[in-house]
Image 1 (cartoon, rainbow, N blue to C red):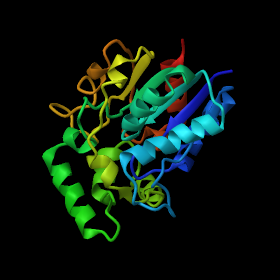
Image 2: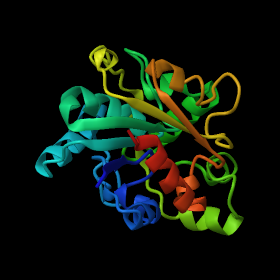
Image 3: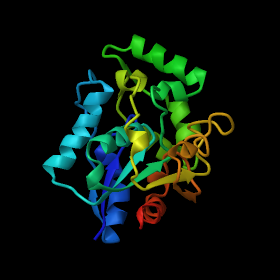
Image 4: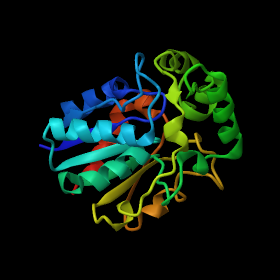
Length: 241
């Protein structure tokens, strides 16, 4: 029986994987959905990227997980790359679902359009705890563009502010780029959270993985809400041997 560890993206916590996790479990998969440090309704946002990574490493070790598929969505891609450096022998395959694959020495914000970079900085500086809340129009038009306005509003209410520091931390990824763990990039073809063209997810991010499997499906950056069953099936395809 396959085991999957699903690492969420920005503005999420582990509980928001529930619709996808339900479908995966119905297909016989063991699923873990940990919450990254600094995320969720009651979390302390004063964390850095290293602390976020360590929270997932701790979860894996405490649960004694081995031979599992490690999935990272969006910002979660930056987490699974660093987790892989710490526990490479436990991971069966890395799956990046429309996720950031950073180059050595980069931060996440180095890989978003200048308008997003400026917006995030302004929002963090205006906040009381150095966090960023995604504006609803961006969520509706760029993140969940394949759903009704009602679903966009309902799901937006589930989001929580994102710690800003992990988004600007520069990551040393030299060890990651020496690992031989199998990798997959799962690309949603209507995902415009990064605009198509110069900033697009695939092939810009995926090509950085070297040798990798490409799996694609129709859908937005948040297809976990608009088509959780379809995403679950594609995650199984992405994680198979």
